[in-house]
Length: 303
Image 1 (cartoon, rainbow, N blue to C red):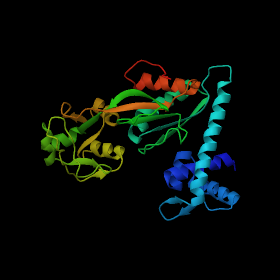
Image 2: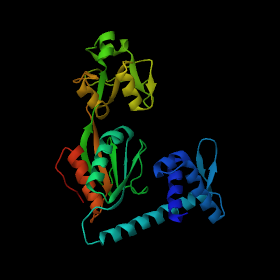
Image 3: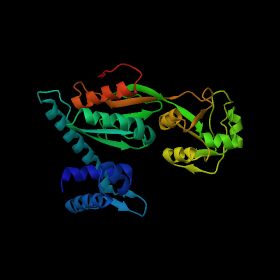
Image 4: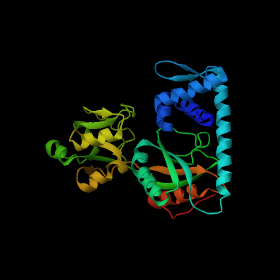
């Protein structure tokens, strides 16, 4: 096996904490991930991971080795970038690694990536969807989409995208059966579809109500937005989810938006990428396309 590839797989296991998650991030099977780790351990003559039934834990040797792996992989990435810059044309080529949150990434970002691949046939893209805040530099991502306020960074450029707006909606069938609420406080008498990653006691927030969130209840909850969307389409209740997930259903009349003037302000969204005086064509073109399709401002690449 390729030793550099095995190092990259080991770093992915260390970052994600499991073979299954690393397999998804590296587009491998969990069995192949295990083979890469085994090869490294046999080569080093030391155990890198302690395994239990749920998670992988770094040994003392593994914790030291993973830092060396990160440095080596970053040096290889830099060397590849230098070689790519030396080509005498401006055609985007090579592999682009992008990370984004699940809901936004699986919709709008995936659409932009698909268009980008059509425009630039010499580029391949790894789109890693995760609600975990990945370290763009340490994990060798070329670009990342972030929702919410950003910490200051001297190493990353942040470009604003269209804000992330939440929508409350229900199917016409549900509203015919249960009635259409005209005030958010009426939701306490309705079946609401909740996300399991939100604290059940946190409630739903509305702009014109008091500072206290509105506590709602219902018969169905899930840790996946798409599952909640499907439940809403089936008439199981009222859903609170991102506009990007529900917009097409609302436009087609499959869902009806509620309380449009009562929702809290949208959250900021940014495109992040490493600061570089000579950005590669693949990154420069990707940033331009993302800004064109998802940004509130003109196309361009800040350095």
